[in-house]
Length: 109
Image (cartoon, rainbow, N blue to C red; front, side, top):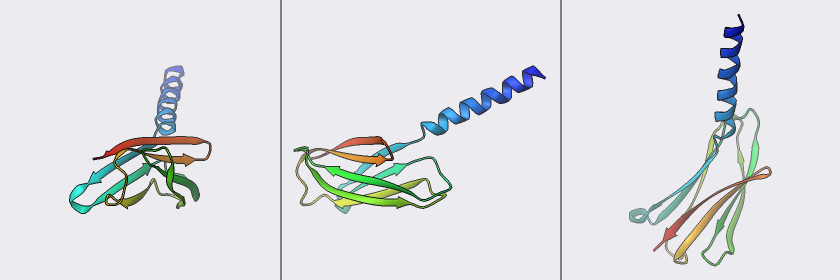
């Protein structure tokens, strides 16, 4: 009986750790479509959740901020911009989710 309880406890512990770290931010540049697409993936929750997307240019200035709602039961949200008209260099895409920040960098050449 103790072995079964131990196994159940370990499975719950492993799953809760993987859920807690299931947030990811990634961007892809599609030159042939003149687009930059950035996506935020999170653990699905049973309530609407507000997050903030920030596009930070190579000079370190925020070029766009958007407050978006991830609907209950959804696990991702994305934003896009056109490449044309953007400064060349390393950009940062940052997501603020409650008190945590997630970010990634990409380069426009």
